[in-house]
Amino acid sequence: MQSTASLTISNLWIERGERDLCQGLSFSVQSGEIVRILGDNGAGKSSLLKTIAGVFSPLEGKISYVGEDVTFDRSLLQKDAIYLGHSVGVKSLLTVVENLRWYCPDVSLGVLHEVLELLEITNHVDVLVKNLSAGQARRVALARLWLSNKTLWLLDEPFASLDVRGVTLLEQRIQQHVLSGGLVVLTTHHDLLTLSSRDVVLLP
Amino acid sequence: MTYSSFIRSEFLVLWRRKQDIFNALLFFIIVVALFPIGINSSAEFLAPAAAGIVWCAVMLAILMAVEGMFKEDYWDGSLEQWIVSGLSLPLLILLKVIVQWLVVVAPLLVMMPLFSEMLYLPSLSFWVLIMTLLLGSPSLFFIGAVGAALTMSIKQGAVLVMLLILPFYLPVIIFSTLAVKAAEAGLPYSGLLAMLLAMSLLSLVISPLMTAIAVKASVN
Picture 1 (cartoon, chains in turn blue, cyan):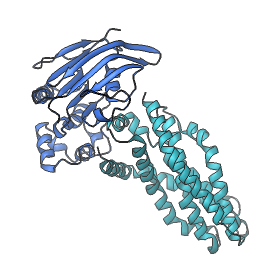
Picture 2 (cartoon, helix red, strand yellow):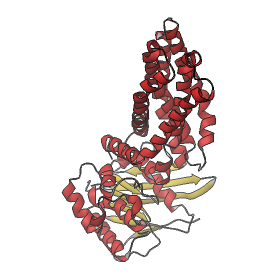
Picture 3 (cartoon, one colour):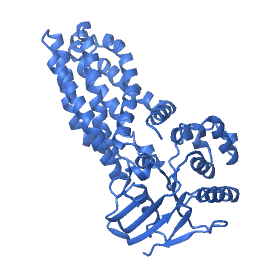
Picture 4 (cartoon, one colour):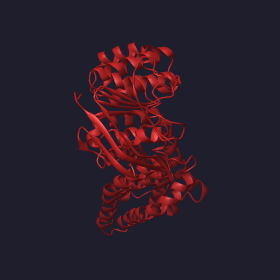
C-alpha cells in the first residue's frame, strides 16, 4: 500500500444516456480521508464511482492518481484500487473460498479463515454463494477489503443489506484503513455512525 | 485477480454448469441421430453426407454453448470487476473463449469415432474430419464471443445472436466439408485446411479486441 496517495478529480463531466451528470465536478482525496458522495437517486453517484474506477470514460475532465494523469489509461489506479459496485461480482456457482481465491489468489488459507471468522461466515465456507442470503453474499464481497492491500477503495453502497453487526465491522475496517493512509470514496444512504467524512454533494 | 486465478474460476464455473455443456452435446447427438432415422439409413446416402451432417450439428451445438457465455458475468457484476481489475480485458476474454473451446470441443472429438461409424464415414476421411474440427471450431467460438458480448444485456438474445453470427459461420462450414469431400475423392486438401487455420488465426487476433469493445459498450 502506498503511504501518501492522492486522487484528484478536476472538472469532470459524465454523460449517461443523453443526460449530463455532475457537470464540472472537482474534488480531491488525500491519504487518510473518507469522502462520501451524496445526492438524490439518479444524481450520478454510482456513475461517478464507476467513472473513477474506469468502467466508463468521462466526457470531459481529468482524473489524477498520485500525481499522474490516469484519465485515458486507468491501469495505474486500477492496480491500486478496489471497486465494489451494486452487483458485487461474486459468482453464485462458486463457494465462498473459491470466490475469494479468484480475487485474492495469493492469500494463505489461514488468513482467509481468520477473515471469514471475523465476518461470521466460517460455517458456510464450502457452500455455494447462491445458497447464501444477500447480506452474507455481500460479506463475501467485502472480505476482499480485509484480504487485499490496495490503497484506494471505491465503495458503492457498501452498507446495503448488511445487519447492524456487519455495519459496525465494516466501519471499523474503513477507520483502520484510513488511519494507515488509505483513501476511501463511498456512497451511502445510511448515516455513518463512527466515521467522520467529508461530503461531496452531487446536484441534479 | 490474476490471469491464472481467472482461468481456474472459469473452469470451476463451467464444471458447476456442466448441465449446459451436456445439453449442447446431447443436442449434437440428437441432430446427428435424426438423419439416418429420418432420411435414409443406407451407406450410399450417409457416407457422402456424413461430414456435412456432423458439421451442421457441431455448428448448432457450439452456437448453443456460446450464445450465453457472458450473461452470468454481466448480471452478477463480474464483468465490471474484469474491467477494473487492471488486467488486459481482451486477454481475459481470449482466456475465457479458450476455456470454453476446450470444455465443449474435447468431448465432441471423443464422440467422433462413434458417429463416423454410425454415418459410414470412410475411414480415409475420418482424420481429415477431425482436422477440420480442430482447425475450424476455434473460429466459431471467437466469432460467437463477439455476438454473445453484443447481446448479453438482452434477456432473450439467443435468436439475435444466431442472426448476427450465422453468416460468419458459413465459410467455415463450406471449407470444412469441402476438405472432407476432397479427401474422399483423393484430391489434395491441405489448402482447404490452411484456409480453416487462417480463419481461426484471424478471428483469434480480431475477436478478443472486438469482444472487449462490445463488453465495455454493454456495461455502459
